[in-house]
Image 1: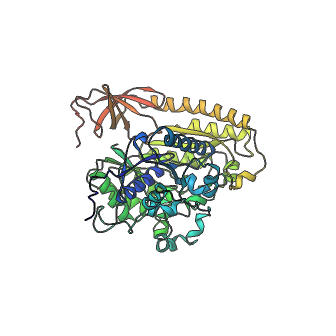
Image 2: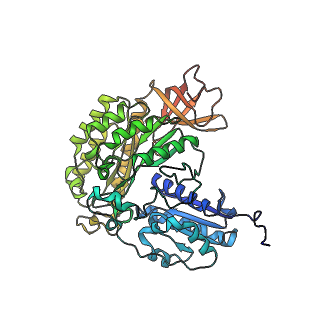
Image 3: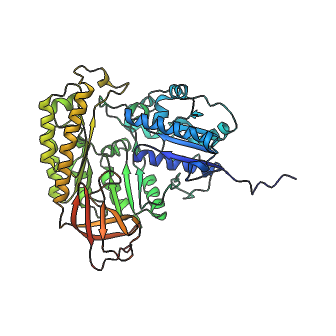
Length: 490
């Protein structure tokens, strides 16, 4: 007779996610695969038999953070119960064997091709097997050059966050698109991946080489996941990708996002649908109209300007200039005067002059953006810009970054002040010691500030309330709940 193993505790795993919301989606997939594969997810790394770090490999600071996190996790093999530390994610995919050799503190480095069998991989590592890290390759080569030829080939390309028909039965729905996810928190907002990869060739960006060519998820798959999220307490679906404005081009319909937004907004339980990362040159009038006019879609425009000087943008291999960007912003505000508009910009790009920086500064002053991220340029290996002439010194780049950051802080604070007296809808995210914190429609998750709400009788995370803005502090707002609005889920 075989021994009864029903009471044997499952091997525990703690999953750490670094980087962007796209990585959060990938972590939810990894968590589901690990759970189905017989592991138990734990919140405290001190309680874990294994620690898995979903790394970021975008810029130097993110890579350093990933390495520091892996090293800290490795200390748990001495100070805690952890037996193994495993690197996954973008940095792991980008560097593979090189990372494994330079960071022996990590017991294994897994690439995207390992995700489908991540539970088996982790169990083997815990059993003492030595995992052979992959040799990185340009993942754009895995799919056809023509976007419309990609859907048929995508299933074999190991794309994180997409459908996974190979998973064992047991995850809903039983038929149709499979939802390969496990929620890792109880937040009322959750990222929902539209697509993976990028076809653009920006000279400063290495992401396409390790994330691959652009591949859209099907509308059916996305809507099924949105329903699953709503069933698990999510009230805001935050649509993420490397380039959301390209959604549908490989499915034969570049305007597919416009129709998809309506389908998502109609999902029972979802109150807000938010779109992130739009390329200004691809943000067509029909998309602006759909985002501004579709009930349930918040008027929020995350526009990747990167700069405003035409010569700098050309060297970045981007399109547009200050005038066309301001025209786009004006078209948004004609349809949605209170729309939230945010962007990131890079200063100190090779060849950038003081005049170029002045053009960027003047543009930001005129644009009246709600949130601005300012980054100093740094060389990324494997990118075209790393070989450009006209490089600025690190001190000069930091000086320009500091100056523009100060300006950006002033501008977004002034924009927040403009909202005094404005009526807003606020999604409550946190209630602690009587302080109620949420986000208004123009505030994206984590990066665009928050709104403190006063006057709610029984505040709870997940409530959507009406309020009036009464004060501001930088990008953050203070608002009074509308009398009689109890924060119900209506």
